[in-house]
Amino acid sequence: MGATEKRMEQLGIQLQQTDWRGKGAVEAVFAGDILYLSAHFPVDEMGRPVYVGRVGAQIDEETAYKAARLCGLNMLRTIQSYIGSLDRVEYFVKALCLVNSAGDFYNMPPVMNGFSDLMVEVFGHRGQHARAAMGAYVLEGNMPVCVDAIIKVRRYEAEGMSTIHTIREDGQETVQRFPKYKPLIPIREVDGVVYVSGHGPENINTYEPLYRGRVGADLTLEEGYAAAAECAKTLLRAVQERYGSLDCIHHMVRALALVNCGEDFTEPEKVADGFSDTCMQILQERGQHARTVMGTRNMPNYNIPVEVEMIFVLVDVYRNKGERNKDGTI
Image (tube, rainbow, N blue to C red):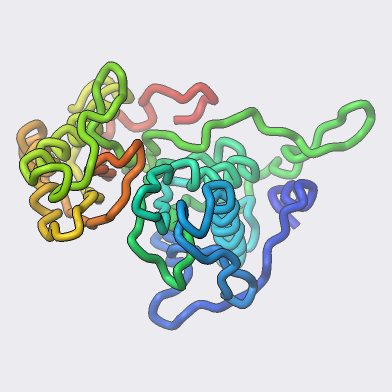
């Protein structure tokens, strides 16, 4: 049993051992030392839903938090089955949470905290991750939430891991409490590839949304385009703050744009063009990127119209030279 598993045992966290993967779509796939994990749901060991219903209607926020935590527990079981010991998890890279939301529910990030808090509880700063949370119109089996993730895996268990999970207090051996890490980090650098958390159209000084509402209902297409352009500026500002200059971007790789759509709106790609066009204007040919656009019905921060996350390749001289987080991690 690895140190992480011993820590989980002391925390009272148990993982169900099961295998209900399909044939084409599997629970995880390796690419080098990166493990890509499929969306995990709040199900029992037989794959049966433990929680059912839309958040904000049949399911309240507190219950949805528990459902997201169960998604995380099921994901830990998958990771363990693929790599043998959770000590081999070097760190989490990013996660995406889909919340089956009622029409007036917008608190997706607090729901996702059920997943994120678990990972920090188990792994400490290794569990921190870039992330995005969005509302979904419907999820499999009408379950309230699902989460996918990307993690970096060590080739071997790290030496000395067995000492991190216990301390002595008053002569008693107890679970070591990690410092209170914030689960969400805006940027995660992995071997020269940078993953940036989802950002919305924010005011540079107050961080308040510049736009709210659904495109095609509360906002015009032109306003949606402008909101997506602001997302690009917000993302690039975060990169600039971390590395000191946008010269750090060798080239963009991929963007995922989530567009909050009115019922009859069918052109989310034209909204996302606001992001892509702005990246090209600022970065020129370095701003070209693969892109996925998804229409949704609910978004966080009181229903912002669009959120975008991105991946880019870092110029070599900037590797591991970004401003460090308060806990000392990059």
